[in-house]
Length: 219
Length: 229
Ligand SMILES: Nc1ncnc2c1ncn2[C@@H]1O[C@H](COP(=O)(O)OP(=O)(O)OP(=O)(O)O)[C@@H](O)[C@H]1O
Ligand SMILES: [Mg+2]
Image 1: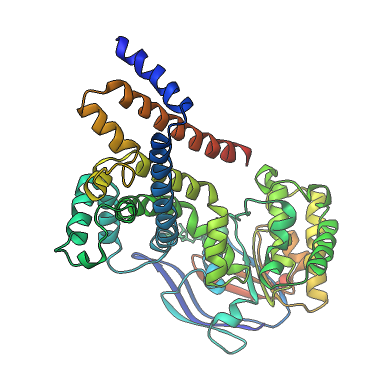
Image 2: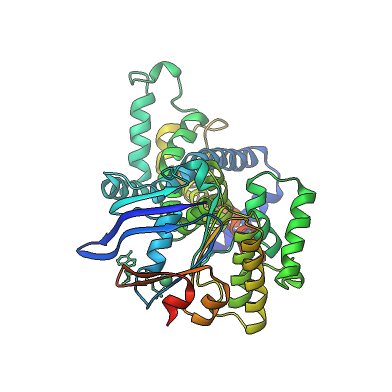
């Protein structure tokens, strides 16, 4: 999915926290979004995801404004993810259940992604009893499983151990290689941005500072 | 003090005597309050969720009204319903006054705001997050409502049990619209009030004990569910 942002502005009361004149995310590419705390990165993703309204400006998704059919192909894994009060399996399966997939297919798909993220032993555990990092991996699996055309990730590997970071990066890269969709990923880890992303966007004080191939941006 | 012990003894006698009159009073009480609780839950839960999640113009005003309605005095509700359904009232032709239906209507009016208000309060806090998750994972409005009810099942259940507790223990409304007619509209609370005013303390205490036991059972079931979850 291609995302085209024009004259985007977000105010909270008197304060403008986001002001982006123009920004283009091309189809099926993997973008890193970096910048200091409070820069407006999460706000940008929330607005793109449709969870929040912008004060001004326009975002086009494959040339269209946001509507219900498009919304079905977008997902957002927030910094504060919410897991359903049920098992790990049911949490990851939920987007597929919503889309009325066949039970057998759901089972296979969930099993596969649980293997990939080494979550398999937790299959029947209640989500409330997971550790912080485990819960985060479950939330990520739930976002990845239905292969959204636009995947928005807000610091997906914060609080994750090095081994699990590798697993997560592998899945994100695989999605990127197989051209499953566009991915925007907020990260504070420059090394990670360099490792994974096609392009990096640097935001500061709500403004777009640089966009480009990681080398140019990260020097 | 003797009459209290007498009353407790009477309670056991009452229950063990299998007196049909007593049991029909207990069953009618449960039936009326259970029915009004179901109706109130079906109306109050979705509206409570809706009010909590929707932004609209008069929201503050509606919220304040809702909170006021949560603490309506039962007699006032009874009086209101009685006026509406009395022979000369707008719904007088239905002949509802002094029937169990009238009691169900009055209790429904009384506890719908309670269930709605408690649900509203809980959904204000957790509801937004649940709604957002459903939306970002591709759910529509209907999916959202179902997920909200599933995720908030415990607080919804607590709201419903609170409503039931209020319904089965109130006396003012059922007295006014039901009339405490033996074998027809007499329920536990009106039975207690009547016996008390006639000086039959032991009978009142006996029925009061039964009422307590019912509350205890209902709350134990709830507690078991909440803890077991
Ligand atoms: N609902 C809100 N009301 C008022 N201000 C807000 C609100 N949400 C965010 N802000 C402010 O907007 C600014 C941008 O917040 P945002 O969460 O987008 O930052 P961020 O770039 O994601 O930072 P971090 O790296 O710490 O996650 C912050 O200064 C924050 O305080
Ligand atoms: Mg953030």
